[in-house]
Length: 253
Image 1 (cartoon, rainbow, N blue to C red):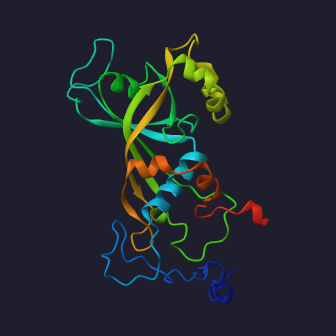
Image 2 (spheres, rainbow, N blue to C red):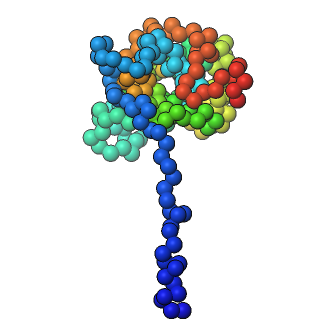
Image 3 (cartoon, helix red, strand yellow):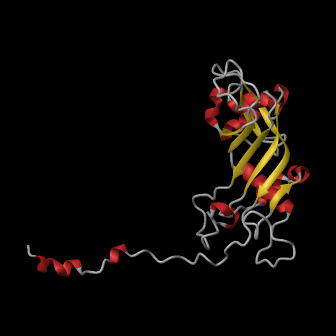
């Protein structure tokens, strides 16, 4: 084939490689990302109150069941633990299960396993922080713009407190095992009395709550008093809706 016969093909427009049109992503760009604006600053949005933010945080705690548990290594290491030296005081965050169960749904229920790093650290005196972030469900309504479902605009928070073992009477009275296993059926293999590891039921007694509701010009960012956290009712948790949630009562499935 001669070169002149290929020229018409080479000169055809490459329409298949054209990029798709961009959506309007600049309708509401954030002006404050990690802090709230000063009270005198004009705002397009109404920033939720501290109590409204506490309700949203409690709903996230209610809907989710996997979090990052952060603890601090003790200053010394045990001969039974193969840990690099000089880690004393260093934090470590690890994924773990939790559930929001009665009698204190505001204090997450945890299945503590004695051999796990997080609980070896708490046994040595470390406090614990439980961190969560909201993931919009797969069937969330279409986004208005780029920022609606931006991970930087999603609510997230940390609960700072200490681990408190639960007594057998309380565990039995409130069916703590049933509540936890309803969220994590696979955890039955390492419940207390199992043949694998020593474990016990515990709660994270929340002492402080730090909340980032989203961009600072449209969401509250800051500390939530623990009294506000504990004072949220179950009715408020059930009625609240997070970004991307559909209202089943209105027929949105």
